[in-house]
Length: 235
Image 1 (cartoon, rainbow, N blue to C red):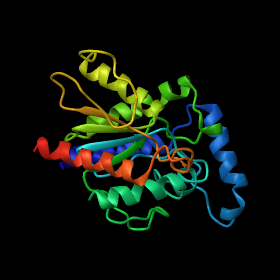
Image 2: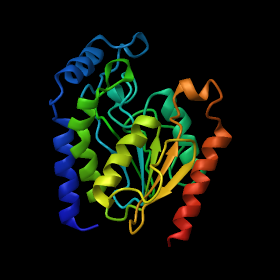
Image 3: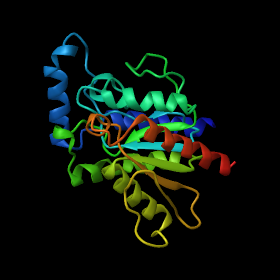
Image 4: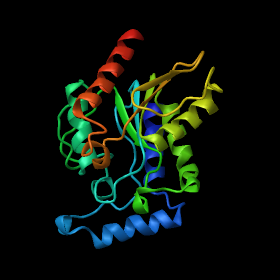
């Protein structure tokens, strides 16, 4: 990757972590970092917007909703230090996208191959529910990442809000979908005519989904097996 692009990534990273555009989110993320959860009382919380993480040459972007209050908002890395990450990273490891199965803290040595992980919102929201206005405020960061990922071939959107955010960006960049409007559902794949990037919907690996059986390890493995097949087709 050329130095100009890497400099743009560094500038983007700095811009994200210094953002204070949403007063409600700033107040909440900092309160959580100050009060802490008992289990992490001795730890220093990140308490800032969480930047995207992964391979800058990636062909696949994983798009989540927002950092968890005591996960990414504590550790400073997407899907790190919470139950969602405990479900996501073993699946990525088995599919060949992650160097290890665990994601406990930002310096644990985890590296991603051909995957970049980001989110619709970069700050932990109260009740895990960002407002539409907050999503829109964060949107330029996601758009910039899509532009910086020069090899991007597909987006895996984890959950309905992430899918809607990705759909809006795809329509902005590539025009309206040719056919019935894409709807979020498990393992649903959409391709735009004359676009190099596809969109795949998948359930979010939240406890609400994994503990109820809505999303099983087998189902999640099928998603990443399908992603690998798509990448093989496009070589």
